[in-house]
Length: 143
Image 1 (tube, rainbow, N blue to C red):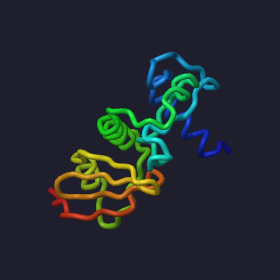
Image 2: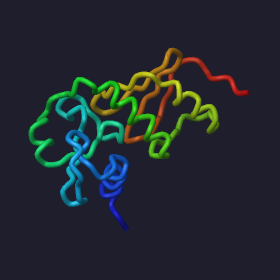
Image 3: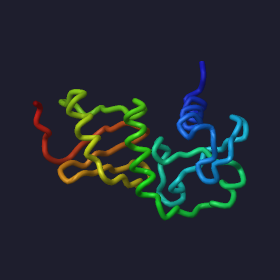
């Protein structure tokens, strides 16, 4: 059985087109390191939308700095993780169509250390370990 961490790394490696997210250098699987886009030391999580593939040199030079485009990148990677079926929805009472509609309307993602918060104008989602486990806000109407 392949360990979860190995599966995570493989997914991110393929998602990032086998290249360093920062410099674009082609990477072999053994050359890739996982980098927390928002560093763990600054409340970054281990969720897919906060992990990118990196060459060792870029990872070394980035250190624990937060990139200026963090909000845009995390939002894009959040939506990508949902499309790739890597985020799980465990909020009771919502079908696949409703949860997909809520996710598609998310416009901000913020890492808080143990968990992340994703928001739109009406709902707030709470995510831990790539699982949406709670939602606050208005109920989405089914059509």
